[in-house]
Image (cartoon, rainbow, N blue to C red; front, side, top):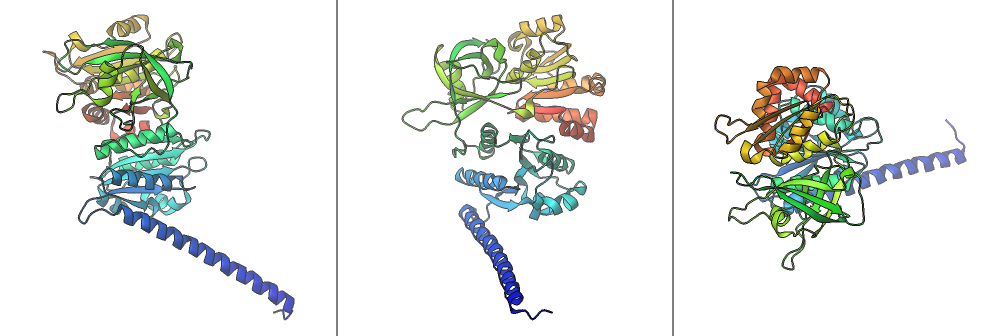
Length: 457
């Protein structure tokens, strides 16, 4: 032991600095806890009310920030919410929550955030019992890394294997992409039953002009569907098959603009047009829907709209050499035919379209183009069903069981499955039919490897 007073002084100073750093960390953590408690108190639901659990797995703080924004948006829309760190929860707590929204970051090459170490090693080492749990997942990542959203995808797979049911398809955010975050806000609106007003990331719109509106199904027993085509005003944006357009709605009667609506883009930039298939929706009182009524009727030819086409990586297709199985119904044909059009004029691995609508006489959307694609070999196989036709009465999901052997052959050749159309009914029915034919494990494997992708709404 030294008795040198100078060394003793420096040792005392070092210990003092260490203690100060410890106290600073403790103070910062206490401050963070107080801030979190204050936020939580502001969101506290009325006594006895069931709150949606918003859980986050954050590395740099973005996921936590989005979790609090999510909870506040839910609360403002009248849906109670509470926030928790996912890594602090047991599977039993997730199950008891019944509804959970998860914001999960991926760090490094597909790794979970540091705070998720225990959860990954213990909770995710095997499937848990999460039956009865409904969840939504916002996965944050950076596409410049090889395993984009790797942890978010692994978490999604674990939830599915554990028996949890997704409220909607996983939303993936590439390096803070504003459009994907707004898509998450759109899904929150479906949960609350009202538009989520908080504009976390204001969109930068371009001007587009309506140049064509064609009624696709006159005399149909279903709602009127229209092909809409827009041309850019002084701009030519780039997009690929699978991307989505956000169309801003105009302000009415002096009120604030009521947000935007999302539509699958049917065309490619080479056509010089952005095309959509839009069905006119009807409110309970018989009046047309706010967005669909404006686009399919009120907006004149030559009229302009605010619109941006945003990247939707989770519905981008494989390379042309990969066999492609396209499944959908109704206006979902827009998102599917874009993938077919993207393969025109190049060697490809084959494409099979399974499509469902109401009647063959009135609802065979884009029939001339599909017949020509089949005759040219661009479309290898075309199977359609019509639920209101006498002698048919089938929905698109029935085709999966009827052609199970052929489906397995295509998948054994490396095919990818792309599903587009209605969330209620079709999407769930198709998923269940695929699970019955392929087995749950194989369907999860196809999901995790990007060979099963969906754009449903």
